[in-house]
Image (cartoon, rainbow, N blue to C red; front, side):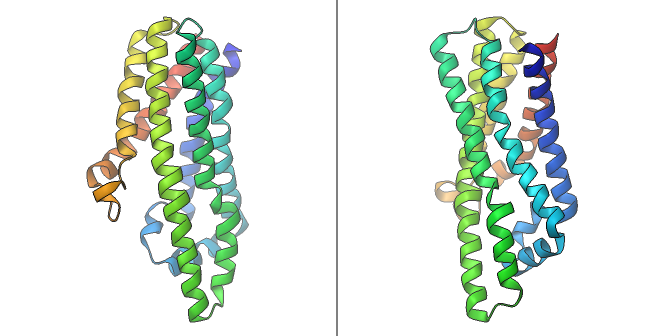
Length: 226
């Protein structure tokens, strides 16, 4: 159990970041999303099956986060049982919403990209509305807002459980609490008055917080193995 937990916690953030870097190189993600819809879809078509498979792998890496959540809770059995139950539930929700946010790319977007290639002006306008609607709903609301919120909450709860259980160093738990709180705050990037253009501070902090979260997860995995 300990071996599987440690390996999964180390491998997952590495897989997340490798896939993200590959998407940046092949597709210009996430900067490409600031371009007109026609340009995004043309770039997607140009990526071919390789790009579709890359998005598919990225989406399913989020699914693999769920067993890591469950296994880590098993390593922290010295913490309060109710806390661990809530922590596990929140972590599984984090995996689910991240998957739902990403899965549009290997299944919905290829269809839109094909349809847009020779579309009439009216049909192109309809495709743009569909693409941007799903981008705001599944991408911004589900994948980013709920994804960062639940991932941040899970990290903070794991941090508390680490401190309670004594299974891992206390400073690792403190780091989880701080990083989790920052990630949860970043989930507000497009909420309320920031809905249209985004909260610039959160936009600048999110990549840093995500890198810190990845490093923290690897550290947890390494110390679980020791």
